[in-house]
Image (cartoon, rainbow, N blue to C red; front, top):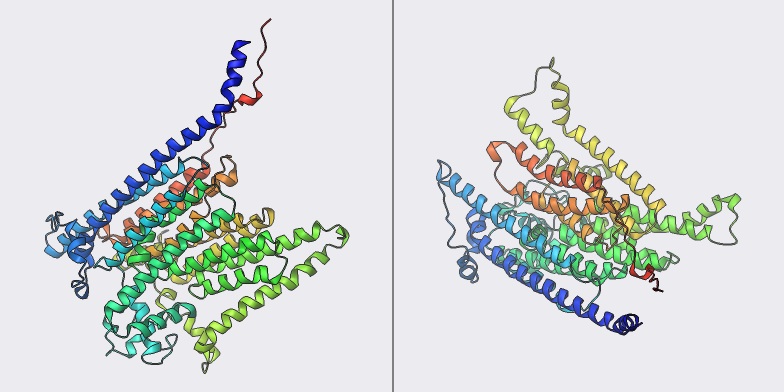
Length: 580
Protein backbone atom coordinates (compact mmCIF):
# COMPACT_ATOMS: atom_id res chain seq x y z
CA UNK A 1 0.00 0.00 0.00
CA UNK A 2 2.85 2.34 0.83
CA UNK A 3 4.43 1.70 -2.62
CA UNK A 4 1.19 2.60 -4.45
CA UNK A 5 0.82 5.83 -2.49
CA UNK A 6 4.43 6.72 -3.24
CA UNK A 7 3.86 6.12 -6.97
CA UNK A 8 0.74 8.31 -6.91
CA UNK A 9 2.65 11.02 -5.08
CA UNK A 10 5.24 11.07 -7.89
CA UNK A 11 2.72 11.37 -10.73
CA UNK A 12 2.08 15.16 -10.48
CA UNK A 13 5.81 15.85 -10.85
CA UNK A 14 6.34 13.89 -14.06
CA UNK A 15 5.10 16.62 -16.45
CA UNK A 16 7.42 19.09 -14.75
CA UNK A 17 10.33 16.67 -15.07
CA UNK A 18 9.53 16.11 -18.76
CA UNK A 19 9.38 19.87 -19.41
CA UNK A 20 12.67 20.37 -17.58
CA UNK A 21 14.28 17.58 -19.64
CA UNK A 22 12.96 19.16 -22.87
CA UNK A 23 14.46 22.50 -21.87
CA UNK A 24 17.82 20.87 -21.23
CA UNK A 25 17.71 19.07 -24.61
CA UNK A 26 16.72 22.28 -26.36
CA UNK A 27 19.56 24.19 -24.71
CA UNK A 28 22.14 21.57 -25.75
CA UNK A 29 20.91 21.28 -29.35
CA UNK A 30 20.54 25.07 -29.71
CA UNK A 31 24.12 25.46 -28.48
CA UNK A 32 25.25 22.91 -31.08
CA UNK A 33 23.41 24.79 -33.84
CA UNK A 34 25.05 28.08 -32.79
CA UNK A 35 28.49 26.44 -32.76
CA UNK A 36 27.71 24.99 -36.18
CA UNK A 37 26.78 28.46 -37.43
CA UNK A 38 30.14 29.83 -36.25
CA UNK A 39 32.00 26.99 -37.98
CA UNK A 40 29.95 27.58 -41.13
CA UNK A 41 30.82 31.28 -40.99
CA UNK A 42 34.52 30.48 -40.71
CA UNK A 43 34.38 28.18 -43.75
CA UNK A 44 32.61 30.87 -45.78
CA UNK A 45 35.21 33.50 -44.89
CA UNK A 46 38.12 31.18 -45.74
CA UNK A 47 36.52 30.22 -49.09
CA UNK A 48 36.61 33.83 -50.33
CA UNK A 49 40.33 33.58 -51.16
CA UNK A 50 40.19 30.53 -53.48
CA UNK A 51 37.08 32.01 -55.12
CA UNK A 52 38.99 35.20 -55.85
CA UNK A 53 41.89 33.21 -57.35
CA UNK A 54 39.45 31.20 -59.51
CA UNK A 55 37.10 33.91 -60.76
CA UNK A 56 38.03 37.30 -59.35
CA UNK A 57 36.99 40.38 -61.32
CA UNK A 58 39.15 43.49 -61.60
CA UNK A 59 36.27 45.91 -61.07
CA UNK A 60 35.58 44.21 -57.71
CA UNK A 61 39.10 44.57 -56.32
CA UNK A 62 38.54 48.11 -54.91
CA UNK A 63 35.71 46.96 -52.62
CA UNK A 64 36.51 48.23 -49.10
CA UNK A 65 35.44 44.90 -47.53
CA UNK A 66 38.01 42.85 -49.48
CA UNK A 67 40.89 43.11 -46.94
CA UNK A 68 38.65 41.81 -44.15
CA UNK A 69 37.19 38.94 -46.18
CA UNK A 70 40.49 37.90 -47.76
CA UNK A 71 42.33 37.89 -44.44
CA UNK A 72 40.75 34.58 -43.32
CA UNK A 73 42.06 32.56 -46.27
CA UNK A 74 45.37 34.33 -46.78
CA UNK A 75 47.22 31.31 -45.36
CA UNK A 76 45.98 29.00 -48.13
CA UNK A 77 48.63 28.16 -50.77
CA UNK A 78 47.85 29.59 -54.17
CA UNK A 79 49.81 27.05 -56.19
CA UNK A 80 50.66 23.46 -55.18
CA UNK A 81 52.48 22.88 -58.52
CA UNK A 82 50.14 20.06 -59.51
CA UNK A 83 50.27 20.90 -63.23
CA UNK A 84 53.18 21.82 -65.53
CA UNK A 85 51.48 25.02 -66.66
CA UNK A 86 51.31 27.65 -63.92
CA UNK A 87 47.77 28.87 -64.67
CA UNK A 88 46.45 25.30 -64.80
CA UNK A 89 48.21 24.50 -61.54
CA UNK A 90 46.70 27.55 -59.81
CA UNK A 91 43.23 26.57 -60.99
CA UNK A 92 43.56 22.97 -59.86
CA UNK A 93 44.96 24.06 -56.49
CA UNK A 94 42.09 26.42 -55.81
CA UNK A 95 39.57 23.88 -57.12
CA UNK A 96 40.82 21.42 -54.50
CA UNK A 97 40.76 24.02 -51.72
CA UNK A 98 37.28 25.22 -52.61
CA UNK A 99 36.00 21.64 -52.90
CA UNK A 100 37.31 20.83 -49.44
CA UNK A 101 35.72 23.95 -47.93
CA UNK A 102 32.39 23.19 -49.63
CA UNK A 103 32.55 19.66 -48.27
CA UNK A 104 33.06 21.11 -44.79
CA UNK A 105 30.12 23.49 -45.27
CA UNK A 106 27.79 20.67 -46.27
CA UNK A 107 29.04 18.57 -43.36
CA UNK A 108 28.32 21.39 -40.90
CA UNK A 109 24.96 21.96 -42.59
CA UNK A 110 24.09 18.27 -42.16
CA UNK A 111 25.10 18.27 -38.49
CA UNK A 112 23.04 21.40 -37.80
CA UNK A 113 20.04 19.75 -39.46
CA UNK A 114 20.66 16.65 -37.31
CA UNK A 115 20.68 18.76 -34.14
CA UNK A 116 17.50 20.55 -35.26
CA UNK A 117 15.84 17.19 -35.83
CA UNK A 118 16.73 16.15 -32.28
CA UNK A 119 15.03 19.17 -30.71
CA UNK A 120 11.91 18.53 -28.61
CA UNK A 121 8.66 18.37 -30.57
CA UNK A 122 7.27 21.41 -28.73
CA UNK A 123 8.89 24.32 -26.98
CA UNK A 124 9.90 27.97 -27.23
CA UNK A 125 11.66 28.20 -30.58
CA UNK A 126 11.77 31.98 -31.03
CA UNK A 127 15.50 32.21 -30.25
CA UNK A 128 16.37 29.34 -32.58
CA UNK A 129 14.31 30.94 -35.34
CA UNK A 130 16.34 34.11 -34.72
CA UNK A 131 19.63 32.20 -34.96
CA UNK A 132 18.61 30.68 -38.30
CA UNK A 133 17.45 34.05 -39.67
CA UNK A 134 20.57 35.90 -38.47
CA UNK A 135 22.76 33.15 -39.88
CA UNK A 136 21.05 33.43 -43.27
CA UNK A 137 21.56 37.22 -43.28
CA UNK A 138 25.25 37.06 -42.30
CA UNK A 139 26.04 34.16 -44.65
CA UNK A 140 24.17 35.91 -47.46
CA UNK A 141 26.00 39.21 -46.96
CA UNK A 142 29.37 37.44 -47.17
CA UNK A 143 28.31 35.97 -50.52
CA UNK A 144 27.08 39.40 -51.67
CA UNK A 145 30.45 41.00 -50.85
CA UNK A 146 32.64 38.17 -52.23
CA UNK A 147 34.76 39.75 -55.02
CA UNK A 148 34.38 36.80 -57.39
CA UNK A 149 31.81 35.46 -59.86
CA UNK A 150 31.80 31.83 -60.96
CA UNK A 151 28.70 32.62 -63.06
CA UNK A 152 28.17 35.86 -64.97
CA UNK A 153 24.41 35.56 -65.36
CA UNK A 154 24.06 38.92 -63.59
CA UNK A 155 25.45 40.60 -66.69
CA UNK A 156 23.20 38.48 -68.91
CA UNK A 157 20.24 39.96 -67.01
CA UNK A 158 21.83 43.41 -67.19
CA UNK A 159 22.26 43.05 -70.97
CA UNK A 160 18.54 42.38 -71.47
CA UNK A 161 17.65 45.23 -69.13
CA UNK A 162 19.92 47.61 -71.04
CA UNK A 163 18.43 46.45 -74.34
CA UNK A 164 14.99 47.56 -73.09
CA UNK A 165 15.84 50.70 -71.11
CA UNK A 166 18.83 52.19 -72.93
CA UNK A 167 18.03 51.18 -76.52
CA UNK A 168 14.24 50.66 -76.41
CA UNK A 169 14.59 47.32 -78.22
CA UNK A 170 12.85 44.00 -77.65
CA UNK A 171 15.18 41.34 -76.13
CA UNK A 172 12.99 38.55 -77.53
CA UNK A 173 13.96 39.62 -81.05
CA UNK A 174 17.14 41.72 -80.65
CA UNK A 175 20.35 40.43 -79.05
CA UNK A 176 22.61 42.58 -76.83
CA UNK A 177 25.41 42.11 -79.38
CA UNK A 178 23.58 44.65 -81.54
CA UNK A 179 25.01 47.28 -79.16
CA UNK A 180 28.75 46.45 -78.89
CA UNK A 181 29.49 49.92 -77.54
CA UNK A 182 27.52 49.25 -74.37
CA UNK A 183 29.84 48.78 -71.33
CA UNK A 184 27.87 45.70 -70.22
CA UNK A 185 28.13 43.82 -73.53
CA UNK A 186 31.75 42.54 -73.11
CA UNK A 187 30.74 40.90 -69.81
CA UNK A 188 27.58 39.31 -71.23
CA UNK A 189 28.15 35.63 -72.05
CA UNK A 190 24.80 35.46 -73.87
CA UNK A 191 25.16 38.63 -75.92
CA UNK A 192 24.48 36.74 -79.14
CA UNK A 193 21.25 35.16 -77.84
CA UNK A 194 17.74 36.49 -77.41
CA UNK A 195 16.10 36.22 -73.98
CA UNK A 196 15.12 32.80 -72.66
CA UNK A 197 13.36 34.27 -69.61
CA UNK A 198 9.78 35.23 -69.02
CA UNK A 199 8.46 38.81 -69.19
CA UNK A 200 8.17 39.17 -65.39
CA UNK A 201 11.91 38.72 -65.06
CA UNK A 202 12.57 41.12 -67.95
CA UNK A 203 10.55 43.76 -66.08
CA UNK A 204 12.82 43.28 -63.04
CA UNK A 205 15.90 43.47 -65.28
CA UNK A 206 14.56 46.71 -66.72
CA UNK A 207 14.03 48.12 -63.23
CA UNK A 208 17.64 47.47 -62.22
CA UNK A 209 18.85 48.81 -65.59
CA UNK A 210 16.90 52.02 -64.98
CA UNK A 211 18.44 52.40 -61.51
CA UNK A 212 21.99 51.22 -62.28
CA UNK A 213 22.60 52.79 -65.68
CA UNK A 214 25.92 51.55 -67.05
CA UNK A 215 27.58 50.83 -63.70
CA UNK A 216 29.02 47.32 -63.40
CA UNK A 217 29.06 47.57 -59.61
CA UNK A 218 25.48 48.79 -59.65
CA UNK A 219 24.27 45.61 -61.38
CA UNK A 220 26.58 43.50 -59.24
CA UNK A 221 25.00 44.69 -56.01
CA UNK A 222 21.47 45.10 -57.38
CA UNK A 223 21.03 41.47 -58.41
CA UNK A 224 22.98 40.04 -55.48
CA UNK A 225 21.03 42.02 -52.89
CA UNK A 226 17.79 41.16 -54.69
CA UNK A 227 18.82 37.49 -54.50
CA UNK A 228 19.49 37.85 -50.77
CA UNK A 229 16.10 39.50 -50.23
CA UNK A 230 14.38 36.70 -52.17
CA UNK A 231 16.32 34.10 -50.16
CA UNK A 232 15.19 35.60 -46.86
CA UNK A 233 11.61 35.85 -48.15
CA UNK A 234 11.74 32.19 -49.15
CA UNK A 235 12.94 31.24 -45.66
CA UNK A 236 9.95 33.06 -44.18
CA UNK A 237 7.58 31.41 -46.66
CA UNK A 238 8.96 27.96 -45.77
CA UNK A 239 8.20 28.62 -42.09
CA UNK A 240 4.76 30.07 -42.87
CA UNK A 241 3.81 27.10 -45.09
CA UNK A 242 4.89 24.52 -42.50
CA UNK A 243 2.97 26.37 -39.78
CA UNK A 244 -0.08 26.57 -42.05
CA UNK A 245 0.15 22.81 -42.55
CA UNK A 246 0.02 22.33 -38.78
CA UNK A 247 3.58 21.06 -38.42
CA UNK A 248 5.30 21.13 -35.03
CA UNK A 249 7.78 23.90 -34.12
CA UNK A 250 10.59 21.36 -34.49
CA UNK A 251 9.56 20.59 -38.07
CA UNK A 252 9.24 24.30 -38.86
CA UNK A 253 12.76 24.84 -37.51
CA UNK A 254 14.16 21.96 -39.54
CA UNK A 255 12.50 23.17 -42.75
CA UNK A 256 13.80 26.72 -42.25
CA UNK A 257 17.33 25.49 -41.64
CA UNK A 258 17.32 23.10 -44.61
CA UNK A 259 16.53 25.98 -46.94
CA UNK A 260 18.16 29.01 -45.29
CA UNK A 261 21.58 27.43 -44.67
CA UNK A 262 21.86 25.22 -47.74
CA UNK A 263 25.32 26.08 -49.17
CA UNK A 264 24.23 25.80 -52.81
CA UNK A 265 21.07 27.88 -52.33
CA UNK A 266 23.03 30.60 -50.50
CA UNK A 267 25.74 30.57 -53.15
CA UNK A 268 23.43 30.76 -56.16
CA UNK A 269 21.00 33.24 -54.58
CA UNK A 270 23.32 35.75 -52.95
CA UNK A 271 26.49 35.39 -55.02
CA UNK A 272 25.15 34.22 -58.37
CA UNK A 273 22.05 36.43 -58.19
CA UNK A 274 20.10 33.93 -60.31
CA UNK A 275 16.43 34.45 -61.12
CA UNK A 276 15.61 30.91 -59.97
CA UNK A 277 15.49 32.20 -56.39
CA UNK A 278 12.77 34.70 -57.29
CA UNK A 279 10.86 32.00 -59.17
CA UNK A 280 10.95 29.90 -55.98
CA UNK A 281 9.63 32.94 -54.09
CA UNK A 282 6.54 33.04 -56.31
CA UNK A 283 6.15 29.26 -56.12
CA UNK A 284 6.20 29.29 -52.31
CA UNK A 285 3.82 32.26 -52.17
CA UNK A 286 1.45 30.42 -54.52
CA UNK A 287 1.60 27.33 -52.30
CA UNK A 288 0.88 29.43 -49.20
CA UNK A 289 -2.15 30.97 -50.90
CA UNK A 290 -3.13 27.51 -52.12
CA UNK A 291 -3.21 26.24 -48.54
CA UNK A 292 -5.65 29.01 -47.70
CA UNK A 293 -7.80 28.03 -50.70
CA UNK A 294 -7.67 24.37 -49.63
CA UNK A 295 -8.86 25.23 -46.13
CA UNK A 296 -11.85 27.02 -47.67
CA UNK A 297 -12.57 24.09 -49.99
CA UNK A 298 -11.86 26.10 -53.18
CA UNK A 299 -15.40 27.39 -52.72
CA UNK A 300 -15.09 30.91 -54.15
CA UNK A 301 -13.01 32.51 -56.93
CA UNK A 302 -11.32 34.83 -54.41
CA UNK A 303 -10.02 31.67 -52.73
CA UNK A 304 -8.47 29.86 -55.70
CA UNK A 305 -7.71 32.69 -58.17
CA UNK A 306 -4.92 34.39 -56.12
CA UNK A 307 -2.72 31.24 -56.09
CA UNK A 308 -3.49 30.73 -59.79
CA UNK A 309 -2.30 34.27 -60.56
CA UNK A 310 0.86 33.98 -58.45
CA UNK A 311 1.79 30.56 -59.88
CA UNK A 312 1.26 31.93 -63.39
CA UNK A 313 3.61 34.81 -62.59
CA UNK A 314 6.17 32.20 -61.49
CA UNK A 315 5.99 30.63 -64.97
CA UNK A 316 6.52 34.13 -66.37
CA UNK A 317 9.94 34.09 -64.71
CA UNK A 318 10.79 30.59 -65.91
CA UNK A 319 8.55 28.00 -67.53
CA UNK A 320 9.88 25.23 -65.30
CA UNK A 321 7.36 26.07 -62.56
CA UNK A 322 4.46 25.12 -64.87
CA UNK A 323 4.03 21.60 -63.35
CA UNK A 324 3.08 23.20 -60.04
CA UNK A 325 0.33 25.17 -61.77
CA UNK A 326 -0.95 22.02 -63.48
CA UNK A 327 -1.04 20.03 -60.22
CA UNK A 328 -2.87 22.87 -58.47
CA UNK A 329 -5.64 22.68 -61.10
CA UNK A 330 -5.86 18.91 -60.58
CA UNK A 331 -6.07 19.37 -56.80
CA UNK A 332 -8.77 22.01 -57.15
CA UNK A 333 -10.81 19.76 -59.45
CA UNK A 334 -10.56 16.85 -57.03
CA UNK A 335 -11.71 18.94 -54.07
CA UNK A 336 -14.73 20.24 -55.97
CA UNK A 337 -15.55 16.69 -57.06
CA UNK A 338 -15.31 15.45 -53.45
CA UNK A 339 -17.51 18.29 -52.23
CA UNK A 340 -20.20 17.31 -54.72
CA UNK A 341 -20.05 13.65 -53.66
CA UNK A 342 -20.55 14.64 -50.02
CA UNK A 343 -23.60 16.74 -50.91
CA UNK A 344 -26.75 14.86 -49.73
CA UNK A 345 -28.61 16.30 -52.76
CA UNK A 346 -26.15 14.64 -55.12
CA UNK A 347 -27.49 11.84 -57.34
CA UNK A 348 -24.84 9.14 -57.74
CA UNK A 349 -26.50 7.80 -60.87
CA UNK A 350 -25.76 11.07 -62.64
CA UNK A 351 -22.09 11.59 -61.88
CA UNK A 352 -21.67 13.80 -64.92
CA UNK A 353 -23.36 16.58 -62.92
CA UNK A 354 -20.28 16.71 -60.70
CA UNK A 355 -18.12 17.37 -63.74
CA UNK A 356 -20.52 20.08 -64.84
CA UNK A 357 -19.79 21.83 -61.55
CA UNK A 358 -16.05 21.32 -61.89
CA UNK A 359 -15.76 22.60 -65.47
CA UNK A 360 -16.78 26.27 -64.93
CA UNK A 361 -14.36 26.76 -62.03
CA UNK A 362 -11.46 25.07 -63.78
CA UNK A 363 -12.28 27.02 -66.94
CA UNK A 364 -12.29 30.28 -64.97
CA UNK A 365 -8.95 29.43 -63.38
CA UNK A 366 -7.43 28.41 -66.74
CA UNK A 367 -8.71 31.51 -68.53
CA UNK A 368 -7.42 33.71 -65.70
CA UNK A 369 -3.99 32.10 -65.96
CA UNK A 370 -3.98 32.54 -69.73
CA UNK A 371 -5.01 36.20 -69.48
CA UNK A 372 -2.27 36.92 -66.95
CA UNK A 373 0.32 35.30 -69.24
CA UNK A 374 -1.04 37.19 -72.26
CA UNK A 375 -0.95 40.53 -70.42
CA UNK A 376 2.66 39.87 -69.45
CA UNK A 377 3.74 39.01 -72.98
CA UNK A 378 1.53 41.50 -74.86
CA UNK A 379 3.95 44.48 -74.67
CA UNK A 380 6.70 42.31 -76.18
CA UNK A 381 4.53 40.81 -78.95
CA UNK A 382 3.00 43.95 -80.41
CA UNK A 383 3.93 44.48 -84.10
CA UNK A 384 5.40 40.97 -84.41
CA UNK A 385 4.02 38.14 -86.51
CA UNK A 386 2.89 34.83 -85.04
CA UNK A 387 5.71 32.98 -86.80
CA UNK A 388 8.36 35.29 -85.35
CA UNK A 389 6.80 34.98 -81.89
CA UNK A 390 6.92 31.18 -82.11
CA UNK A 391 10.48 31.37 -83.37
CA UNK A 392 11.53 33.50 -80.36
CA UNK A 393 10.82 30.56 -78.04
CA UNK A 394 13.28 28.30 -79.88
CA UNK A 395 16.06 30.85 -80.42
CA UNK A 396 17.89 30.72 -77.02
CA UNK A 397 20.94 28.39 -76.82
CA UNK A 398 19.14 26.02 -74.43
CA UNK A 399 16.86 25.03 -77.31
CA UNK A 400 19.68 23.55 -79.43
CA UNK A 401 22.84 23.31 -77.25
CA UNK A 402 23.68 21.10 -74.28
CA UNK A 403 25.46 21.74 -71.00
CA UNK A 404 26.35 19.62 -67.94
CA UNK A 405 24.24 16.70 -69.13
CA UNK A 406 24.50 13.24 -70.62
CA UNK A 407 23.89 14.76 -74.05
CA UNK A 408 26.95 16.97 -73.56
CA UNK A 409 28.96 13.92 -72.47
CA UNK A 410 27.93 12.03 -75.61
CA UNK A 411 28.60 15.06 -77.79
CA UNK A 412 32.13 15.44 -76.38
CA UNK A 413 32.74 11.72 -76.85
CA UNK A 414 31.71 11.82 -80.51
CA UNK A 415 33.74 14.99 -81.05
CA UNK A 416 36.86 13.31 -79.65
CA UNK A 417 36.53 9.73 -80.91
CA UNK A 418 33.93 9.97 -83.65
CA UNK A 419 30.88 7.79 -84.15
CA UNK A 420 31.36 4.00 -83.97
CA UNK A 421 31.22 2.05 -87.21
CA UNK A 422 27.70 1.51 -88.50
CA UNK A 423 28.23 -2.24 -88.24
CA UNK A 424 28.90 -1.93 -84.48
CA UNK A 425 26.13 -2.43 -81.94
CA UNK A 426 27.22 0.85 -80.31
CA UNK A 427 26.40 2.95 -83.36
CA UNK A 428 22.66 3.24 -82.77
CA UNK A 429 22.72 4.13 -79.03
CA UNK A 430 25.66 6.55 -79.39
CA UNK A 431 24.18 8.33 -82.41
CA UNK A 432 20.77 8.54 -80.74
CA UNK A 433 22.04 9.77 -77.37
CA UNK A 434 24.17 12.44 -79.06
CA UNK A 435 21.14 13.88 -80.87
CA UNK A 436 19.36 16.88 -79.30
CA UNK A 437 16.02 15.98 -80.91
CA UNK A 438 16.09 12.54 -79.26
CA UNK A 439 16.64 14.14 -75.88
CA UNK A 440 13.78 16.56 -76.50
CA UNK A 441 11.54 13.52 -77.02
CA UNK A 442 12.94 11.89 -73.86
CA UNK A 443 12.19 15.07 -71.90
CA UNK A 444 8.65 15.21 -73.24
CA UNK A 445 7.99 11.56 -72.38
CA UNK A 446 9.48 12.04 -68.88
CA UNK A 447 7.32 15.13 -68.33
CA UNK A 448 4.11 13.45 -69.46
CA UNK A 449 4.88 10.38 -67.36
CA UNK A 450 5.56 12.46 -64.23
CA UNK A 451 2.46 14.61 -64.75
CA UNK A 452 0.29 11.54 -65.22
CA UNK A 453 1.60 9.74 -62.12
CA UNK A 454 1.38 12.94 -60.08
CA UNK A 455 -2.22 13.55 -61.19
CA UNK A 456 -3.19 9.99 -60.22
CA UNK A 457 -1.58 10.38 -56.79
CA UNK A 458 -3.33 13.72 -56.31
CA UNK A 459 -6.69 12.23 -57.24
CA UNK A 460 -6.21 9.48 -54.67
CA UNK A 461 -4.75 11.73 -51.95
CA UNK A 462 -5.96 15.28 -52.66
CA UNK A 463 -3.81 17.40 -50.35
CA UNK A 464 -1.38 20.27 -50.82
CA UNK A 465 1.36 18.05 -49.40
CA UNK A 466 0.78 15.53 -52.19
CA UNK A 467 0.84 18.37 -54.73
CA UNK A 468 4.22 19.55 -53.41
CA UNK A 469 5.68 16.04 -53.58
CA UNK A 470 4.31 15.50 -57.10
CA UNK A 471 5.93 18.76 -58.24
CA UNK A 472 9.20 17.88 -56.52
CA UNK A 473 9.29 14.46 -58.19
CA UNK A 474 8.47 15.94 -61.60
CA UNK A 475 11.19 18.61 -61.45
CA UNK A 476 13.72 16.11 -60.09
CA UNK A 477 13.07 13.75 -63.00
CA UNK A 478 13.37 16.57 -65.52
CA UNK A 479 16.71 17.70 -64.08
CA UNK A 480 18.09 14.17 -64.45
CA UNK A 481 17.24 13.90 -68.16
CA UNK A 482 17.50 17.54 -69.27
CA UNK A 483 20.15 18.31 -71.91
CA UNK A 484 20.67 21.79 -70.42
CA UNK A 485 21.61 21.85 -66.73
CA UNK A 486 23.22 24.32 -64.33
CA UNK A 487 23.72 23.98 -60.61
CA UNK A 488 21.36 26.83 -59.65
CA UNK A 489 18.41 24.80 -60.95
CA UNK A 490 18.65 22.74 -57.75
CA UNK A 491 17.24 25.69 -55.79
CA UNK A 492 13.80 24.62 -57.12
CA UNK A 493 14.18 21.23 -55.48
CA UNK A 494 15.55 22.51 -52.16
CA UNK A 495 12.68 24.98 -51.80
CA UNK A 496 10.10 22.23 -52.30
CA UNK A 497 12.04 19.72 -50.17
CA UNK A 498 12.13 22.15 -47.23
CA UNK A 499 8.32 22.38 -47.12
CA UNK A 500 7.99 18.61 -47.52
CA UNK A 501 9.38 18.02 -44.03
CA UNK A 502 7.06 16.16 -41.71
CA UNK A 503 7.20 14.78 -38.21
CA UNK A 504 5.46 11.59 -39.33
CA UNK A 505 7.28 8.46 -38.22
CA UNK A 506 5.17 5.80 -39.93
CA UNK A 507 7.23 3.72 -42.34
CA UNK A 508 4.79 3.58 -45.23
CA UNK A 509 5.64 3.60 -48.94
CA UNK A 510 4.42 7.20 -49.19
CA UNK A 511 6.62 8.28 -46.28
CA UNK A 512 9.64 6.55 -47.82
CA UNK A 513 8.96 8.34 -51.11
CA UNK A 514 8.86 11.70 -49.33
CA UNK A 515 12.09 10.98 -47.47
CA UNK A 516 13.75 9.71 -50.65
CA UNK A 517 12.84 12.87 -52.58
CA UNK A 518 14.14 15.12 -49.80
CA UNK A 519 17.38 13.12 -49.56
CA UNK A 520 17.76 13.20 -53.36
CA UNK A 521 17.32 16.99 -53.47
CA UNK A 522 19.77 17.75 -50.65
CA UNK A 523 22.39 15.33 -52.02
CA UNK A 524 21.98 16.84 -55.49
CA UNK A 525 22.55 20.30 -54.00
CA UNK A 526 25.99 19.10 -52.87
CA UNK A 527 27.05 17.24 -56.03
CA UNK A 528 25.82 19.99 -58.38
CA UNK A 529 28.91 22.04 -57.48
CA UNK A 530 30.87 19.64 -59.69
CA UNK A 531 29.70 21.70 -62.69
CA UNK A 532 31.97 24.55 -61.59
CA UNK A 533 35.17 22.54 -61.53
CA UNK A 534 37.46 21.51 -64.35
CA UNK A 535 36.71 18.17 -65.98
CA UNK A 536 38.46 15.44 -63.99
CA UNK A 537 40.99 13.71 -66.21
CA UNK A 538 39.85 15.91 -69.09
CA UNK A 539 36.60 13.94 -69.49
CA UNK A 540 33.29 15.61 -68.72
CA UNK A 541 31.63 12.20 -68.35
CA UNK A 542 33.31 11.57 -65.00
CA UNK A 543 32.10 14.93 -63.71
CA UNK A 544 28.56 14.08 -64.81
CA UNK A 545 28.70 10.70 -63.08
CA UNK A 546 30.00 12.29 -59.86
CA UNK A 547 27.14 14.77 -60.02
CA UNK A 548 24.21 12.52 -60.90
CA UNK A 549 25.02 9.10 -59.41
CA UNK A 550 25.17 9.96 -55.66
CA UNK A 551 21.68 11.53 -55.49
CA UNK A 552 20.18 8.66 -57.50
CA UNK A 553 21.85 6.08 -55.25
CA UNK A 554 20.64 7.93 -52.15
CA UNK A 555 17.11 7.99 -53.57
CA UNK A 556 17.20 4.24 -54.24
CA UNK A 557 18.58 3.56 -50.76
CA UNK A 558 15.75 5.52 -49.11
CA UNK A 559 12.98 4.17 -51.32
CA UNK A 560 13.99 0.53 -50.74
CA UNK A 561 14.69 0.85 -47.01
CA UNK A 562 12.14 -0.93 -44.83
CA UNK A 563 12.53 -0.21 -41.16
CA UNK A 564 11.07 -2.86 -38.91
CA UNK A 565 8.59 -1.53 -36.43
CA UNK A 566 9.13 -2.75 -32.89
CA UNK A 567 5.87 -2.56 -31.00
CA UNK A 568 6.30 -1.80 -27.37
CA UNK A 569 3.56 -1.82 -24.82
CA UNK A 570 2.65 1.60 -23.47
CA UNK A 571 2.84 2.34 -19.78
CA UNK A 572 -0.82 3.28 -19.83
CA UNK A 573 -1.70 -0.24 -20.95
CA UNK A 574 0.21 -1.94 -18.18
CA UNK A 575 -1.84 -3.27 -15.30
CA UNK A 576 -0.59 -3.92 -11.81
CA UNK A 577 -1.85 -7.09 -10.22
CA UNK A 578 -2.13 -6.66 -6.48
CA UNK A 579 -0.51 -9.33 -4.36
CA UNK A 580 -2.64 -11.30 -2.01
